[in-house]
Image (cartoon, rainbow, N blue to C red):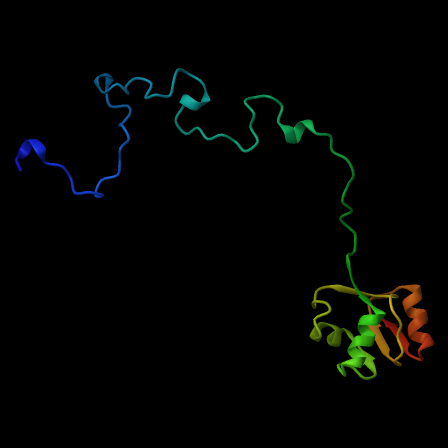
Amino acid sequence: MNLSNLQPAEGSTHNQNKRVGRGEGSGKGGTSARGHKGAKSRSGYSRKIGFEGGQMPLQRRVPKFGFKNINRVEYQGINLDTLQALVDNNVVTDTVDFATIVSSRLATKNEVVKILGRGELKAKLKVSAHKFTASAKAAIEAAGGEAVEL
């Protein structure tokens, strides 16, 4: 071993890139391999998402249509057959209120609940919810129960 064949240990160095902007003699001086002029040659350049070189971007070319009603109320629907399943599993006996619905994980405490008319209800239940469909209300009352709107 002598000074002419010294080299770092295997795996200790990993930067194989040529340093740019360190004078003309390095071969990467002047424009520092960025070419001449244009946005990409400037410092601080970062391409905006969706930028297409000044061409009208896709998200602005495509026509927009429709609208979102900001006042729309989104209901969490619970069907009659689900209520009957609660009765069959001995979770409820005579009343189904909002606290029961939340505790049985049919809705969260922040949701607005609507009782829907799918399935049939055999048990006599006093059901409390924010809304009822006409068929659900009729089925609950036909079974001898009561539909209470919150």
